Image: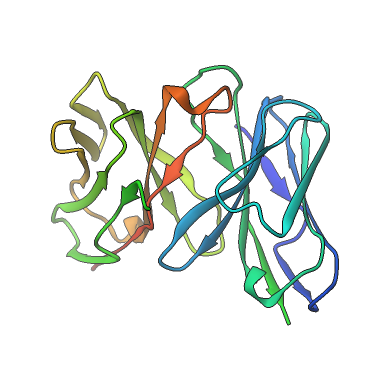
Length: 114
Length: 115
């Protein structure tokens, strides 16, 4: 079974802090994704990556950046955390190419920005 | 503009009865659809999918129906069990999404199955 792990389940940060969220997958997947989940809004794509060192903006990239130095690891960075970035953050991975697109998700990180 | 819509935020069903969760989409380029289930404090898990070349896909108690002309899909759960209580997300993708095959998600429906 694919395993996607996220570095923290719960995180509390202060406004203005730099925040790193880490995600690791163990199935050699080419694609990795970062979403945030908010009530009534579903999952919204922040950034994704289809290869090492490659990244593309999703629907809501403002205030975020990403890093993918190794195939198995995809990091989400909040350069200067703000209260409106309080959310559940979900990482996912999928096979490359056309594929079936099925994404495997990590357990999520509940981030609170005070 | 939401391209995938789940208009019912919540649904309650009696154990043993049928649960029907609905999803509408606006992008006619979507060619593959998935349903995910999410329990609290866990990530979404894949449930069932359907390609646009089909109108029905079945897996045990779960069946997904696709009506392309109406741009509508539905997930049927028969019989419903208390363990099915979760948030269900509909998701869609198109062949033109690029190599990473992005998913567009709906806002989710909270299903509660009452014992």
